[in-house]
Amino acid sequence: MSLRASADGMRDELTRLRHDLHREPELGLDLPRTQEMVLAALTGLPLDVRLGRRLSSVTAVLRGASPGPVVLLRGDMDALPVTERGDPAVASRVAGRMHACGHDLHTAMLAGAARLLAARRDLLAGSVVFMFQPGEEGQGGAKLMIEEGVLDAAGERPVAAYALHVFSSGLPRGVFATRGGPMLAASDTLSVTVRGVGGHGSAPHRARDPVPVACEIVTALQTMVTRSFDVFDPAVLTVGSFHAGTTENVIPDRARLEATVRSFSPASHALVRDRSTALARGIAAAHGLEADVEYRVSYPVTVNDPEEAALVAETVREVYGEDRFVMVPRPFPASEDFSFVCAEVPSAFVALGACPEGVDPATAAVNHSPDALFDDAVLPDGAALYAELAVRRLARAAG
Image (cartoon, rainbow, N blue to C red; front, side, top):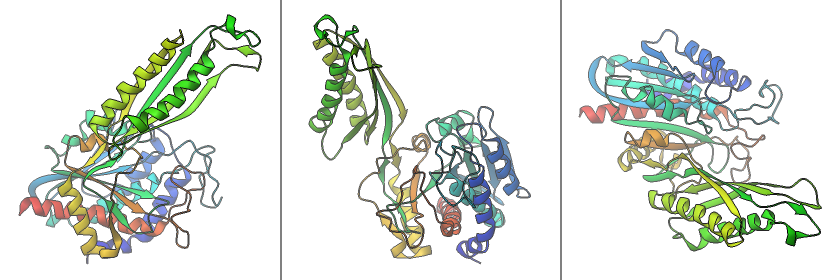
């Protein structure tokens, strides 16, 4: 029986696991209940299982019947601090928490792949590492797992690594998409506090008002990204937080803004950091004020290895058909901490459309929305693709 057919036979099991995970979402690095459910799903399989020390990770190693290289498969497990607006019968039971980015599907798919590959252990020449990762949503769980040895769990570094990510919009249901080279953006945070001198709103000349200076910084940052960057290697800078003052007739002594910054190459990543920090300090100084500027690097660019992306394309086309694969023309502006794995191992990050049947992907609620919906129908396909990639990559290395 093919991996795809075997995965289809696990549909109900995968759906139950996904719903169990969805009803009990956990945040960040500490996911004890999620970890418990993953361990239960792996019970009885011939796996070497190790738990994280600083985070609730699960690393499981399947060793094939004969020696060979190592392939890593990753699924992230954490939820978001979002209040779900879905059907109460299947929605999160934890107030203010939701699997709004589909990590519950990733976890179920990876557990399914472990079961599929364990059933074919006698045919494998090499090992597969299953990386169940907490803390993708901003905590850098992948980096912590690397520090705790996930890349060496099987005794040697993987020759390749793969991650799947579902999308509630943008892609038709069941369509896989990837590309060689940059796949997702780097993500950083720019924080600026302009320090002035407070005073009475009727006498601004006797104060040193930080508000118009901070406003000028906001508009100048937008001009900067249109005038400092090649349109084919862009940067995105969005000021999402701006705070100053307490009432209308008091000039505050400080104004604070925070921005998310996205870039798609090492060159633009370095340029946007240098230009944005110099601009904020320079504008403040031009007005006789000071600016405390902090630039926090979060996730680097997720760069797919061209050969691994080509293997994904070949596998999807052969297993599911030509109409189930899209080679995306440009990177997505979202970011991912799978980028830390990509920096160490030839890797491919793969998108999978999970928009519910009958919903237009162009207008569906996006990932991270309280209205985001993901179709359980994609679970077997995701599990089978994980397994197919591992089998084919090990076979390619052996051949």
